[in-house]
Image (cartoon, rainbow, N blue to C red; front, side, top):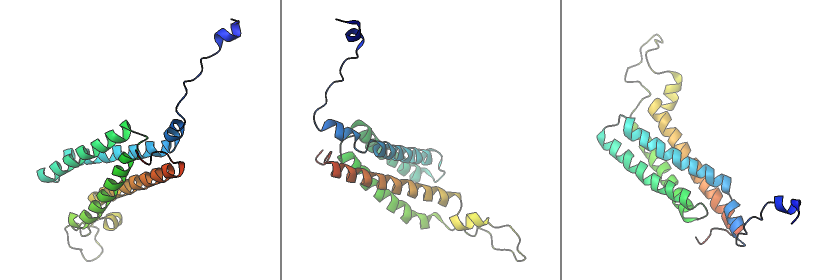
Length: 170
């Protein structure tokens, strides 16, 4: 054995024929989707702990955080499987719809609870709060954007896998 042969690295193990395509097809999109689901778990957990919406809503938020964590664990555990991605897609769309429907029920923050004073006195909300509905509406809109982003990423990942022929029946 020559010195050059002794220093040569060992050959990489061979993967089955379709395994490398399944793992690399959409890997960055899968990471982004997993991040969105993790952010959703964190947002629901934070709202449950410090949301200030009462005990009933805190329990609902905690249950949603637990439900989302099962989906997150499945996405992390089986990155090449299509079933967790489909589950993330359906729950993201459902949560976006629920958040949109709950938005009008959050109360009227456009008046700030104070009648407008004549003479242009600035006792009401700022212009930004009037447009967004205050901090609660802004947080809800951020959650809607997060859920729609997760749904879009899941859709893109499923399409990419369908085109490559990987992960369709798993």
